[in-house]
Length: 402
Image 1 (cartoon, rainbow, N blue to C red):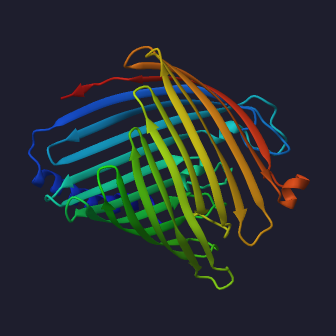
Image 2: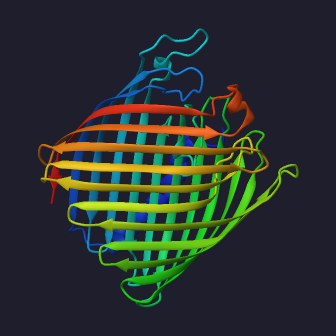
Image 3: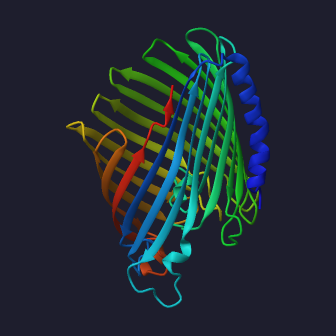
């Protein structure tokens, strides 16, 4: 294993201590805080939980998720912390084929934690620390452009110390370092990895609504088994424009990826993004297009992904919160005659009884179509479709705010 949870703690302690020292040294103790415990519980039914092309199995998923949201702000600093653990149980609704695993053998307790701390050390210098910890079976936590259907259980932890220095009202620079750990513990069928990434940004704001930045990132990914380690260098130019209630962003650049094993061909790709985000008193929307290489490629499976995504939400009658979202992703695998088309669309409806209680329902559909020969012949489950429905209850209470 690359790094166990004890390693996470050893890495986090000195960085957290450093930020907390800055926090208390640069702030008065008078501040505002909020403590909000919450509880979510629900039931979800998927008609093809294992996302199989040939053997669909209906599975019920039950979850209970207690958590706490904490925030503390002063005149110069802030700390935001959110944590929950998710007790998840599975129950087969169809007969289990001979030799297949039972769904309840995948029962687990997930964890989700996030920490953001920052302090205005001087008039020009902002120092911060971000950390996120996850234990889950959902593959998209490993990579924003994930094309995986794997149900393996893993931990991932990302810690990011950062600083921002302003040279005046318009020019600024940012520096970040991110250490990312992906750990499958004792699962010998998967490969652990770690990533060290440095980010350097120079930005300029023409005015309050228009700006641009030049973003350079360099990162190394190391695997603990047979996959090739690699180094990526990426440079992007991004522009931003605020049109009243709509924020527009666009950027483009180049990513060059060099592998350590000579047998693995180096990659290079254009990378880019376009997005629009709108916020009205009762409505919100998001539209986005992203293009680039996936980062996590155990087994040397890398692809150029084109991802279109969107969402729209509206609050009706101050009580009914409606949201619809979806995405399409084309994954074009490097060095292989394989392209995957993946679609997903979902709708959510929540009834807000008051500030503390909400009851919701969700329904969705997802499908993937691959031109891989094994998928077409049915020898591998790369093609699938899956419907799901869910009922959910959310409780939260402002325990102590000042």
